[in-house]
Length: 235
Ligand code: ATP
Image 1 (tube, rainbow, N blue to C red):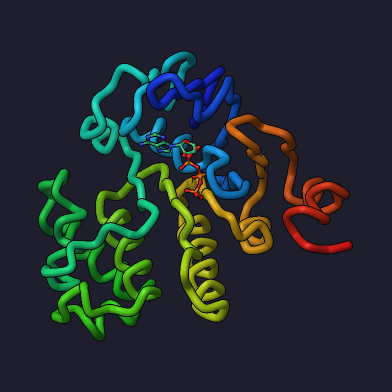
Image 2 (image 1 turned 120 degrees about the vertical axis):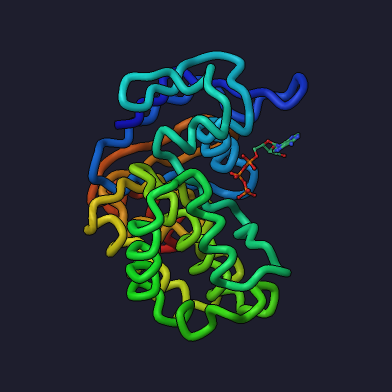
């Protein structure tokens, strides 16, 4: 579904990612793990068109995204849940969700999708008239995911969903990620929390200073000595 070929992104003269090759097959969850500043967010921003490629191609269903505007990329079926969630604090939960459907005109389907989102995230339904800025971190993460799903994406880009959340909430969020995938959405997930990422993904890539240093199926990665030691803390 998504094929990143030789992607290089610079901020000014400084390279953030170098010659990355990543594949995300339809129906799968693919994770990108790595420490702070390794280039994970930059990779996602490349896919959603927020940063421009210096070199390489990003093929989505065969079309090169490096020449497509970000809003057009959303229309093609890619939605991003940004790091830090980016909900509109002065709008209610319901208003934030409705904004997620801004590219659509099928009112009936939007309404039934809203019901589906509420069944996926019952807490959002309970709080649909609450101002989003007053939600807990976990609830804001759910809202950001719900909003992205309201665009009916084929590919969901998730940037550090676990960030700043208590372990029990992180588990809840990851259960929902699995469910979203089981219901047919392909997911590209960026995480510092390697343990959680590998619990939900099918395939993973490890980034260090902008380069891929390891990749494999989740079982291969979980059994790799370097990954066990550095990313999973198992000695
Ligand atoms: P984190 O988990 O901390 O977000 P990351 O793996 O997502 O880390 P990126 O945010 O992609 O890493 O950053 C990769 C590199 O690019 C870092 O060295 C970072 O300082 C740099 N960088 C990121 N955004 C910018 C920017 N807008 N301008 C200049 N440099 C940037």
